[in-house]
Image (cartoon, rainbow, N blue to C red; front, side):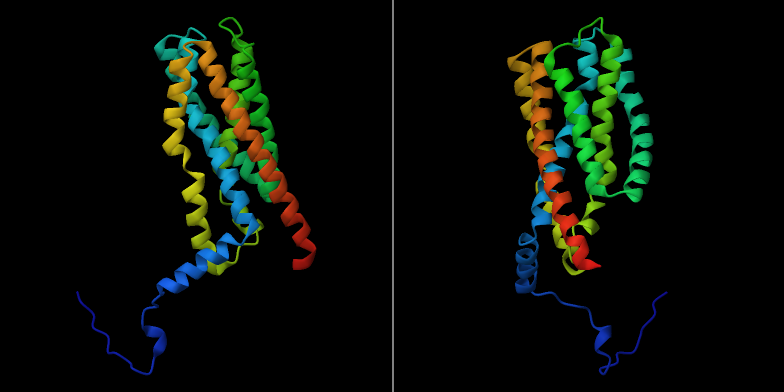
Length: 230
């Protein structure tokens, strides 16, 4: 069925809104002037780097811990269930506190777990330590799946340019999709066995530290802005 509506030349609101190239360019300039946007770019890039490293958990269990392929694959499957629980808990906590504070805590948790892996203390017989550490890293990493863009509102990003801000943040934040696979492959190929995995988790720790610093400044920046907005 086709419905034809009569045009009303006096009704300006019925015409589609056309955004000029100049306006789009101005929106990008406005967004790039916001410190919160730059900090969120770094935060999400560092957090998503940790998420990409979850791809090697099963491989770690197989090659370092000596798990058979079935048990190693189960590690990855079980972590998917944990992700749901972590997401709900972190989401509730973020509602009660602030997203930036939860990001700081999540990066700190990730750093602890990453350094334990990188230290080389986890061996085939340290099953309990392996389980504790992998859950620790997973908690820190999966928490960000809930927090990624919940900080947009806290960052005082104007509603008019929110779409532009999200686009730019995503452009930078999701670049680990491009470089993390090759980076992990190079580290594991050049250092076969446990040493290669230690280097991968050391890389995670470095990114998590950078993310923690950015999250701290993001939290501090927007905490200072609170009294002005009340």
